[in-house]
Image: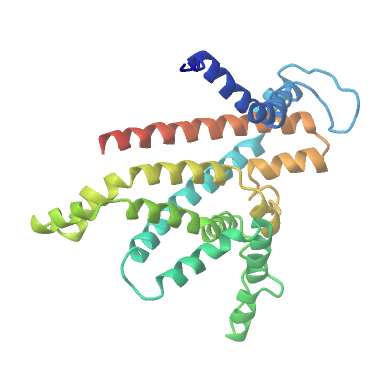
Length: 298
């Protein structure tokens, strides 16, 4: 006699899946959602970061944020770090990927060399470049002195040090963009290029009409990752300039750190954190929506 086995219902299967999601959801709630909501709560207080007591001050910290001239300097710096790093990492990373996707010698070694800085701590990378650009004893200035030229204070120049930070961040993480673009290029069928060759298309036409549209998923990933990473930039700034001179090279991350641990102004630091979250959310969502639409068009 055949024994019938009752299959679990769809609701029961979905219920078991939710139990599997539960540990991850609890982790996200405990380490991300709760600190985020608590940060918003603190932004309405005058807490110093250490005291057991504090007062709620309403919107006073937000009024202070809007009237603080340092805020807009730091927001400008943060946007330069985010947008500048994104632009350079994607242009250079795509160039590397296009080159290393060809049949050339030593391309595996070259890929490894380009990717190697990614595995180094950003703080350590910042110190490596600090000893290159440093005014006193830096490698660059030692070379200039050996050539009979005057030393240059690049890290102390408020018009240049921001772009030095963008350069170092790009140098370190361009390998990530390269790897993502390489994966995208290797997923494009060669049939498209063979058909284009038969039609007599030039190299630029093939790049514009085949490579670029079919790389849109990789471009989307790189743009969003780079924007978020650049807007949160912290370690490289600390090791290269410490946010100085003054607040000229501060990002919102380093400014919050300074407010909390140096000035014991946790309430205002939390307010800056809320502003930073809003900026990151808006820019990353706009980039995601825009490039996702380009994927559909492609």
